[in-house]
Image (cartoon, rainbow, N blue to C red; front, side, top):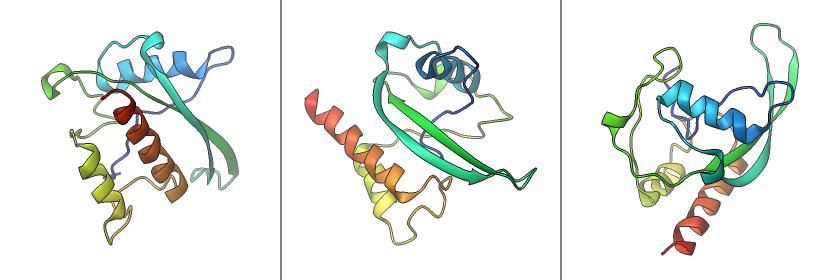
Length: 130
C-alpha cells in the first residue's frame, strides 16, 4: 500500500476483452463512465510477479490504454479499498518524477521498461494532438 500507480487495473473475465475490462475497472475504482471507443491502446507489457499469498510465480501481462478526458477531482468517486488518493500531474511533472534520483521509490514496481515506454507513448499522443 501507499504507492502511486499510473493506472487502474484488474483481471479480465473469460470471454471479455481487455478494453471492456478497462471500462469496468475505471468505473469501479474511479466512479466515472468511459466508453471503449475512446480508449487508445498503447501497449502490452509483461508483468511477471510472485503472488504473495501462495509464493507462486505468475506470468501476467498488462494491456495498457490511455484516454483523454477533461475531469476534475470532484468528478471521481474513489473505491476506498483500492484507491486512497489521486492527483493530476502534467507530463513534465510525471517525467521529472520518473527521472528523479529516487527513481520509482514511491511507485508500484511495474519495472522501468513499463514506465519509460508508457511515458514515451503518452508524449507521442500529446504531440500528435497539438
